[in-house]
Length: 331
Ligand SMILES: Cc1ncc(C[n+]2csc(CCOP(=O)(O)OP(=O)(O)O)c2C)c(N)n1
Ligand SMILES: [Mg+2]
Image (cartoon, rainbow, N blue to C red; front, side, top):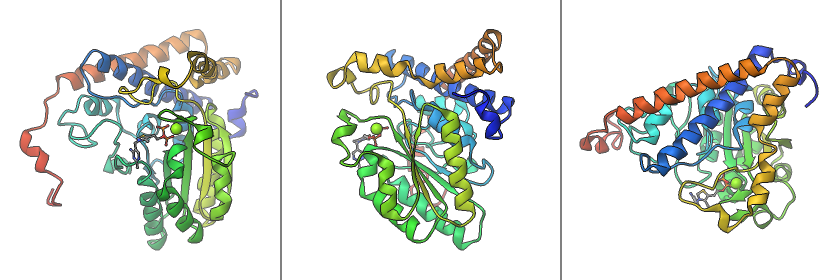
């Protein structure tokens, strides 16, 4: 990364440190969830590991008081930036009553929090895409200054929902940012077996919108692309497709064994490009962070993760009758 690239983007030293801390927080929450899963305490984990830079870089480029995010299951970095707390995420992991995402009734990764304009999604992949297009249409009809930001995996970019949503947004010039988090796999299927075109961003031309591919391990590259897309959307010029390329550093989920379809060497090679390491190195090269500050940040993050874990583990489960809530529109 070039020296002080963040300054060229108008980002202060404090803001890039905040980005780094959010990325690290997402990583440490995720790592804790795996430990809790493997010790039998939480039922399921689906990781953000390897995608934090794309998620946090993107979310920092949005307006956290106006814009709507429609995240997919890996987007810990997006929801943390938009105001969901580590405690709330742990409550979801432990499936406790206080979980704001579903009151403890959903699998983790189904993020939703009305007050922070994090729109809840469904388990079938890509359903969030037409939802994002619909919210952008509503915003346009009501003359609201908002953009919607929706993410999905590269495998999910083959679903009809993506193509229908992208086409509608292109035709009606809606302020939607489509961000594909290309982590090179859809469970066991590698990218070469998913797409016949070279890049996911190549698909944009078919829907009359710009398409860009950026390094998903570099939060500043993603920030710039999303910032430009948001400005374009606010000017009424329509949607943008961004492909953020990174790598999934964990198995697909806690129920998957990735050793059956990819080599440990490939994963080890990807780990050398891990954004937690490379962005940390950038902050050190530019003199913004030293070893002491790095330790201070890590200690602060671990304290937050420990407190969130203890709180959620000891929190009560929902009452059985709560299963009937939010089903018939009277709550
Ligand atoms: C419509 C639909 N088909 C299949 C699944 C099962 N499934 C869940 S995640 C996933 C892989 C998606 O891959 P990708 O879009 O690349 O996202 P990633 O998990 O790699 O981030 C599949 C096939 C599903 N949830 N919904
Ligand atoms: Mg994928």
